Image (cartoon, rainbow, N blue to C red; front, side, top):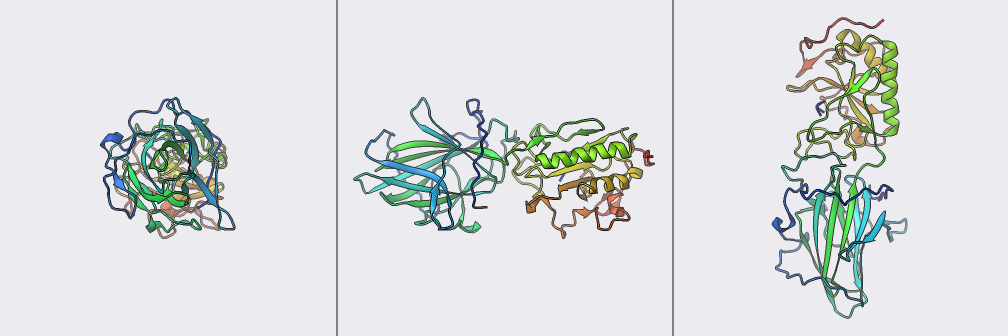
Length: 396
């Protein structure tokens, strides 16, 4: 990663404010400009949606839930629920990026035989998520077809990208239907306006914070700095509390090991994770060159800002606390070290051993640091040191 730069539901307890949401969403366009599309597996249809009006003799259900050990669907309560001034019920949930979320749909207690629904969604953020860019638009939400039961999550290829808005097919009353949504890989607030008509006519709005919970910010401190924020991602130094403790220990140990190594540059931590985690698209295009830096368990450290004579000692220091890799040696990249929390349970945090973009720097036993973790390289070939940084060591 450049330095400048499953299905169990998770309900959080943080309740951010939605009152100051920007009028521009991640799609970069308003609802009126979006195409109306059919539900996955259904043909497009010209459906006229009548005005929403309250009806007292039915009970409309659209709720997320979990599958218990008996294969039963148990609805989950939202983090928060309230009625807006417009009379519409709003609910707030919180899920992890890439989670597959199941919803139950049911219109019951009415004499009419069928009902339909439309969902209009936007990827909206008050920028707490960390993405400050809107062009190109974010990829559409992935949705499954309707199911009569909900025993297991569908396979990945059973999800279809659905631009907003999309229609559900006609559904019989007093019958439960299930469908799944695949949460975006990037952090955001997903706002879903669910409008039903026919036997049930109502509107509800679900607000889903797609985020990695409980990340904390790491700021510059004694003997080290953080760097690498950009206008599009102005807050890039968020980590788990456990990983922050490890990074602070690295900085403190390095200060003791090499107290003079602050000029011309101190130890420099580069990108970590965004405030809400999720995909860190360093090229601002909703894609990422690597799968790491998503859960607050990765951090980059500038390599060229460290004197070559100090790098072996620095690598040994970092290897006491984290997995350390040499990365960024391709053309156009600044060489850096990629750190990963040793105890992470996320497979994306640990690079694939076959990925040649990463060179592991902490072999066991480690009498010597691999030369590739000391040299600056470009496409596997040695490159010159930065002219601002002396080569000789200034460690005791």
